[in-house]
Amino acid sequence: MCRREKCAGKNAGGKVKIVLWMILFIVLFLVSLRYIEKRSIYFPMKQITYYPGAVGLSYEEIYFDTFDNKRLNGWFIPNDKAECTLIFCHGNAGNIGHRLEKILMFHGLGLNVLIFDYRGYGKSTGVPSEPGLYQDAAAAFKYLTEKRDIPREKIVLYGESIGGAVAIDLARKEKVRAIITEETFTSVKDMARMAYPFVPPCVFSSRFDSVPKIKDVNCPKLIIHSVDDEIVPFYLGEKLFNAAVPPKEFLKISGSHNTAFIDSEKQFIEGIRSFLDNKGSGGHL
Image: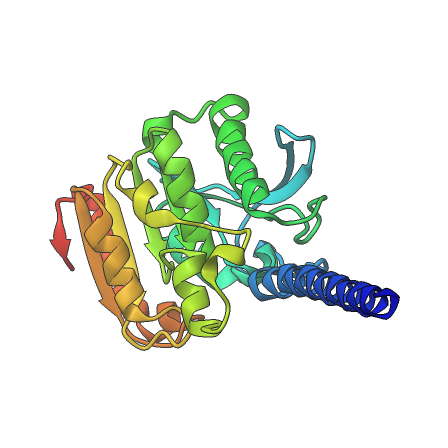
């Protein structure tokens, strides 16, 4: 009997060890996923090498604070002919210094431009996160409306890639003139299915779930997407457009994820110009 009890005790102890090892493995797996998730979503660069003066634009370097006390850095590029001001929510890589070509295009369209770095990017303090990026855009909007007295009906939101999700979140909460997204995905879940098909999407903490949000955006919307986008497939741009309520327009361009606006420069510029002139009459451009 004693031997049997000892054997039973050893077996029970072995099972406990197996369970503990399994728990440890799961914890380590989830921790590694958080690391992979962060490294897959955010690619900030701290050093700003290029400034608007390099492309002949006058600008003002600005700083403003978020609700949770992060200090954000950005540029305000004025245009004497401007009727509207564009808030530029950039993508997940680099910093504001890597967007000069696009800033120049928007300036050429007769817009003031406010571009800012998210927390952890460029000269902005903090560490990037989904809630943080939403707060950063809200702080930029507050800066324009309160510090520069720019009416909200004269503010256009623009977001590239992940910045589109940030702009959509802001447009859902604040009344603005219009919103433009370019190469924007629908959700982290949809992107994860392609990049990590073996990982259940529910384990990712970031959502950036724009489909339900864009249904609540009532201002005119322009969804721009390239048929050649190798990072965010074209069908996700169509899915985002289909989820949006009118007034809305869709601009199909060509070129890679990061260079489509250059590869389709004329179409890109004229499509935005037409949208802003018509204030989102609807349809495909």
